[in-house]
Image (tube, rainbow, N blue to C red; front, side):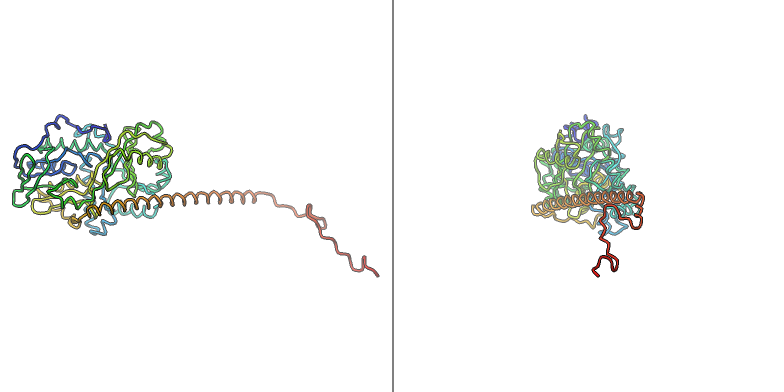
Length: 483
C-alpha cells in the first residue's frame, strides 16, 4: 500500500492507534506538543527518547492534513532557493543551514526502514528538471551544491533527461542520487507509533481552546481537560486556531492536489524510465511511478480550498500535455492538503518566548525540514542546543490575510503562465535550430556531391559549344562590301 491508497491511516502497529483517544483527565508533562503532524510527532519522538514526558494534542487525527497527504520525496534544501539563502544570511550560515537540512533527510531515512515502519516502500533518487534550456545555470548550480554545500549531485544533459523522460518539455536536470521516496502516509503514522512506544502520549480529537504561556508552568485548556507543561511546542501550522490566530496568520495557506492513475501497464514504461521522483524547477510538476505501473502526479498550487475531485480533469490534461504518448489516463484517486508557506520561504523554527516554541511553515520541503525541526527543538529544550538561532533572521511576518491569498493566487497564475510561455519559446527555438541544422546538412551534402563530379572538358577551339547559339561572324575587311 502506498501513500495514495485509501484508508491508509493505520500504518505500522495498527493496534496502537485505537488506544490514542481524547484528553479527558488533567495532565502534567514536561513538554506539550500542539499538532500531530510530521514536525509535532518528531518533537514528541525525540523528546521521549531523551527521557522527557510528552503529550501531543491533535484537534482531529494524526496526519489528517498535509503531513498525511504528500508525495513522499525526501531531499535536502528549503523552499527558499539556495542563492537567495546565501544572499540573506551569508555563506557560512547558509552552509550550516543546508547541512542541517541534510541531517533532516538522514533522520527520515533512519526511521523509514522496514524494521521500524513495515511497508514504507523506499525508493532511491530524485531528479529536478528545467522547463527551459539552462546550461549555464546548471553549471553554476552544480558548483554551489556539489562544491560549496558538499551535496552529492549530478548534472544531466538534455539527451540524458529525455532518455529517461520521453518528452520534449524538459531540458537539463540535476540528479540527487541520495534523495529518496517513501510512503508518506505510512511514515506519519509510523512516527506516531514510534513516539508512543518511546513513551509519548497522543490525544486526538482534542482541540486547544486557550493557551497561557506565562510563568514557568504553561497551561493549555481543552474542551474536556487541562494540561500543564514546562514547554509548549506549536506545530499546528495554519490550523492553530483561535488561541494562536496571530501566529497562524503569518502563514499563507497553500493547497496542492494530487492524483494517482489506474494501472497503465507497459505504456508507462515506454514514456518514463526514471524510477525516482521528478520535479520541475518552476514547482509546477511533481510526479513519480508507484506500484510499478501507476503514475502519481501533483497539480500546481492554489491558495484556495476546493473539493479534490475538481482537479482530476486538470491533472489528466497536464499528464497528457507532458507525456502525449500516454494518451488519456484514468484517474483512480485524488486528494489534497494545505501547507503553510511563509513570506520569506523559510520555515519558522525557534523559541518565541521562554518555554514557547514554534515549528511550522515548511512549505513543499516538509519531510526533511520538519524532521530537522523536531530534532532541533527537542535537543534545544533538553540539551540546550542553540542552533535554532540560525533561523532568527527569518522572522514571523504577516502573510496578508485574504489579500495575501489573492495576491498569492495571482502571482502563482502569472508564474505558471510565464513558465509555460518560456517553455514554449524554448521548445520553438529548439525546433528552429533543429530545422536549421537539417538545412545546413542538406546544403553540405549537396556541395559534397557537387565536389565529387568530374570537371567538364572545355570544347576544342573554333568549335561551337553544343546547345549554345554562336554570334554571327563579322566579315573580313573588304569582303562583301560594295566597291
